[in-house]
Amino acid sequence: MARINEKKIAYKVDKGLRRYLKAYRREMDLPILYSDLLRYSEGVTLYDKYGNDTLWISLIYHQEDLNHINAALKEIYAILRANGDLSVMQHLYVDRIDLCLYGNSNPFRVRIVNKINDNFDYFYIKNADASRIYGLELEHLLSPNRISYVVDRDTLIEEHIAGIPGEEFMQNYLKHGKIENEIRLAKEFVKFNERCFVRLLGDMHSSNYVIEIMPDFEDVHYRIRAIDFDQQCYEPRKSIYMPQYFKENMPIINIGLKHMTPTTVRQYQKEERSMIASRIRYSSRQISDLMKFMVQSDLSKPDYIIQLREELAEFYSKAGFLKADRMGQLVQISLEHLLEYN
Image (cartoon, rainbow, N blue to C red; front, side, top):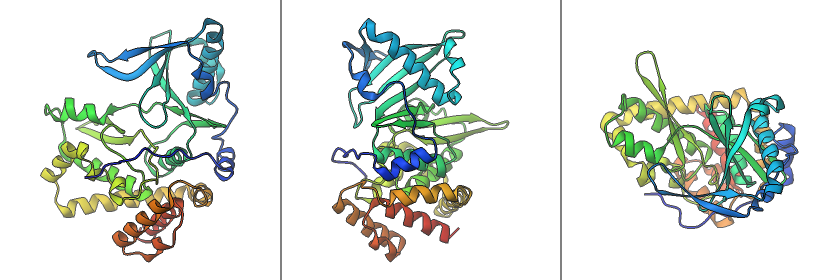
């Protein structure tokens, strides 16, 4: 089973990635930065509806800072959700600012409420890590999902990705037999596994993805969406990039073993790789620009790169992986290999 033993190193956004972000309007001046939100006066432990400690704290700020903070956060939300249309801000208010006390990035989570109908949404403010930004961009370009995020200097703003957390889904749905179509769920997991492996997105255990349940006129569809991109092409072992090797995912894996044969699994893998190839061709210029800078970026340790390139070369029987000396090159070779066979 796959497991990560060491805390990931954060990598600064280099000049090349910064050029890409500016060219594709992912970078802009923001009214508030991550460091500004660190000036809170105190924090209160946040509990879930069952009374469990969430490991987040809800923050309290000095009154003289609060007006500026609230106005800035509403403006950022307008940038994420309404292409910067500030007219939507008049119906919004900031209900809560939370800080996560665990994980690599210690993100802030902002809860925004529409005062007309009490509908709410979230977004996140984090330290800008190059690995995470490449992960977000690859998710946007190569998966069926679209991601809204912006960067300003060392601050990263991310939209909230809605869905049922994988851990909760397994506990409340799988465990109690509330799945309407197990085969479709198993098929989606195979496709999700393939998407992660092709672009080397690691650490996809059940706490790092959500599951969407989408009603169809005859049945339901499922989609698994990554929500944590810190481990984009960083770890040295191939298994870290394959969700099938995480013990936390065993409840879904067991459903696949129950319903699918190796032939069926290969069919779904080929289907997903074909879809990824189509997305690469559709966005070829942008992906080419991204790869141009990614292959030059420092995203992992030299010994990690050596181990992973050897494992990938053996897995694919492709010596080209052995020539890579950056993680970005391994991603590029993986995508090129996919295109050769699709």
